[in-house]
Length: 481
Image (cartoon, rainbow, N blue to C red; front, top):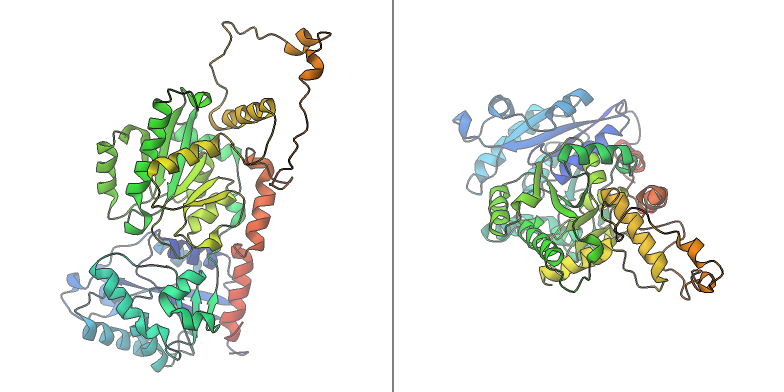
């Protein structure tokens, strides 16, 4: 594959083309690819029931398939979409037959087949290889499986991928995802290449104008907004997220010791982007916890990057992940992130991320979130500077506060009153005895000024999709890295 191939076509195998993490990452890569050299096509799955056949053709399935979120984007970029019958576990023979027929009908069209749907990759990749596809790749994007029978079946179907020779290349978005799908032996022997889930970093960089526009749209201009982005399914652990948020509201509403007095009177909202099979259950739970009026179920958004700007904090208590792009996106937007320690550590790139066990009580997560928002840190500083910094951050979050500790708006000029009394010298802030642990380029309370520093760290860790597009183009053209 070194030369003489002209434009290379790559076939990506997925469950669908909705707003899932894998789909978003592939589409970001596709948009940044030199499409005069590399073109993507997509092989997705849907139910065969409407066709009335057990093993329908791709054309027959496409005639009954409902258009998905990214369909139009694929067509505009020059790609094609094909379809296989959804694998149900009881239609193995029909599934194999549909795959064989598909690759026979499309012989010599693709140089690479990249299977992101690893639950059945051990079925369709060997068939593709036998049909003459030069390079067959299995790409692991999750470090776990759902609970119950579905998870057991997924592990069983993936077992052949842990042997050498089933694929030409194995990719994984993280070491944990690689071990989960391909096994520790292949990972440790270097037979699995780690390719982080890259994003368009500049698109997520902090933008004050977009922040103000989305907050006005949502009616949260003067609120403290805790955010989450993810499909409503088992892995994302939305029930824990809601319990954490409920504890945040209770800690602030019942703060008898005035630990969080600076936040008193401030509205708090939970903003969730995404859809999924468990969404209705989560909405019912929000009613049960008496927080539904404080929750915003925003659904899927084509401009999700703008909604990160509207958030003030990001909470992500997933049960498992391959490498969650949403946590990378949140960091690129300058958000402090509290993430479960079951999430792959590769995502912990900047000072913005803290990790915590989902075996901890939701109340402990809530305290951590509030302490982070109040900029409680592990170095000493004088109380006046700390209070000024907190107030500046909260002003950036929710605008100017209307409350005043004085009965009138005529605030005394303390500097003038102190002159000649001796207090003027005492009130000069002293230098902190301990040095800050954070970089001088980085201020947790200022998303705008810290943006370039944060983006630089993410870029250095391999999360820039523009750089990754060049690397993958080299692979697709030459067949090796």
